[in-house]
Image (cartoon, rainbow, N blue to C red):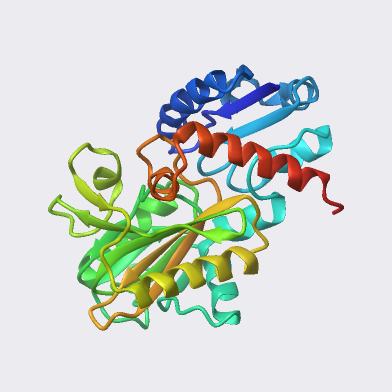
Length: 306
């Protein structure tokens, strides 16, 4: 097939996107496809034309555009199938504050939160106990994520995110270990346990993308009942958000064995050593197999009536 590999973009996660695209391109070529690279940052105006000239698009974008559903909507307009979720599910999942409302509606435990669309006064205090995590509401890869231990540091953390043009979501720190669980098609994959080696104590940007900064253990060495619950919650969140193809849900596993759903990623990292590919490998998928399966699922989704 003629495949348009869409990567790059202009979000703060551009370099992560381009890094993953190199491995995807190699896998696509090994599968016998003809690949054309497309970077929205340099040629967004040509996306509809490029998509119309290809049989399939493989999206490897992080942040906006891509995870916000804009590229998917344009591909739909061009009649070009693609892997993963459509515009509506992508948009809902990217917005953490909105996604958490949907989690609560479907009985999925998620940490309390405060959503801030504008920067509050310097003396403002949230009705949450410290320590707190201050996050970009629509950003990913843990960019802009900071732990705040007192009110004295809160305003600076908020200001740093608002200066990027995004909104803010604040959550209390939930003690425990980080667990992530992918969904592929209609099945949940074996979870991964993430153990940061850095001094951050949580899975920040450095821990995600610095070799040796974190240990990722798959399948996660956790009780069977916790694995089953992580898989159930990942599938429930996937369906509640209206997603398709694949996704990855991130959790905190507290000392009492309870899972707390943080967010769901609709375009998870796709290097051969990224979290979801590790989970797929645990059930027998090589990286090339995984790429082929995502294309198969994307084509099948495009053939279903909307």
